[in-house]
Length: 329
Length: 130
Image (cartoon, rainbow over all chains, first blue to last red; front, side, top):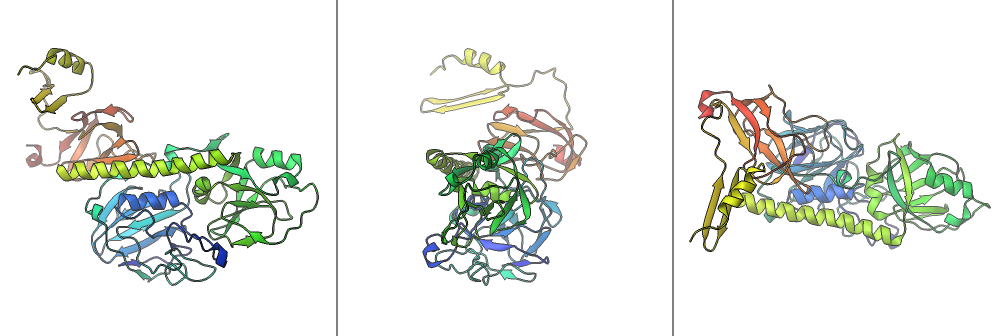
């Protein structure tokens, strides 16, 4: 069991998402940075898709009521376990009664905004429609369908076979595969259905200018600020299905990128889509920071997916070797 | 049976940072160790922490700008004083006892092998120095 000690906001239980329910009008949810969630689970011998706590408001403190192996991935939050520093992206063992504190993210090598507390065995909440993610709009899934509050007590699942060893870490994928353009973090985007309906100047600005992530950005969507994007002629669309990553342009010309808690339908024109393989990068981009869009095609998007997969597969392989080697020693 | 090319291998090893080579095969085993010369300066109070495997030495976490330890710093037993990186995997270099850091013997980013001397420590108690 773990107990949330701090007054907290917007921390939720998330896994890799509730896929296959868009047809019922149920959005995807899931970790904004699924690479961090997966890597944290691999460090603990968990299933890659086990549930963790996504934290986006700091400081955040919790107490382990039982001995528990854990890893904090995502943003480097200068975590401490009973005042002793804990490395980011590192598997650690906590004794019963110890307190874990996550501070404000340190943006030294990677500007990231969300941390994931993964525990051996995963956060044990009931799966709803195949996922433990919190569906905030529908108020179900996760812990009682809501964000965590001070005093909440969460159950921890049974640790997997590979666990009994901690004390090693992973280099975050953001440092392995840096994605930047002109010194600004970038994500790859494919043109979407209404791409051709925008003026040439708008399209040039879309690719060429950095976009600022405004404070009206959250798990539902990121509202960006930059040059106004104008359609050649006014566009009116019926509502249609949308997915996380879709970049809509409302009448004001300031784009919105749909994120993990996006509603499953919308009626604004779509200028592009952030590829699924890069959504985690955007999911970590802090409010107030700049982001650029890099054009890519279908094949490049698939290759990017394969690269993410390769990072996790290689991590799993190396962790397996390390466990084997240390087990012998 | 005699081992072939031992002299040649020794010569090659001399040109590297490798201080210990062990080969095990169906016909037998060979162990080549780089013993410091007898007249090498001795610092009996020091503990030299060596690498437990092959990898890239990191004096800091890749996400962090701050080094894990610096000369003069006091470290606790089992504190992480360096990292060894193999691909994306990071494994710890641990202090064997409470100590002050005498110095780092390899640079950040240097490729090290099994047994490479990484960090020199002055143990805090004489007991730990033995």
